[in-house]
Image: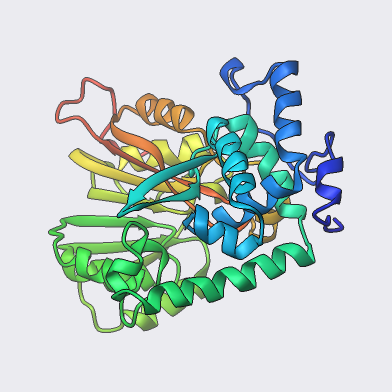
Length: 351
């Protein structure tokens, strides 16, 4: 799709992504009236609001900083910020004597869908110049304050030497005391290297023998770890064999997700825990097809129903993260437990 310029972005009231594989069902609460739809189109039809929202989608900035970056009058910036905030597209927070603004992580669904269309197609010299000036301003801001104070409130978005998500995960994993663990879709053993020292036994399952070969090489010499080739929809294990089952970013590859979750429930012991991370429902099959995904994600409520249907008690399920990179995929984390009794009807028998 050809990128749109900033001026063209205000002339696309009927634009929709045309390379979608599927569109998640929407409730009536997720639809928009004619009046509200026209209001949204008018909101995004103003180039200044598009500039501000683009900047605030990447950075947290004050009015004065937005004025410095864009070269617009303060009154004009403030007026447009008010419109965007009233529409639920921005949130703000006090930081000392000033207020900083940022694009809302959870915009109203209709506005979020329309903004995703506009943002994905924008390519404009004005926006590029805004970003260059903004980066210079942020470097100057950081130089004027100690690093932690300069990024207070958004530390997770910034790098510092050694402070990576991988290092953080290793630190958190040291707190774990796990029993017998099944990692479905284990991949090449990266997670096994982190989890295995915390497990009584670790079994990694994957459908690819080549991938498993890499995992075995990575974990060579670890006696309580083994890797098994198989399918998540037909686990080659007896019932009630594991204390924990992990499905991390593999449910999107399932040809029959309900069956895969049913199998995970079957091999759990009483009181055992299933943890699932997977993409939330999306309409970006053109992106995920390249990775071999078999479905377009899940709605949290639908995932909870499937887990309950498998005889598990759902402890929590919801969207826990959202990617900053377009198209902004969201990730669901679900935690469910097998009841201590068999009242829910999960069989310990090997299927």
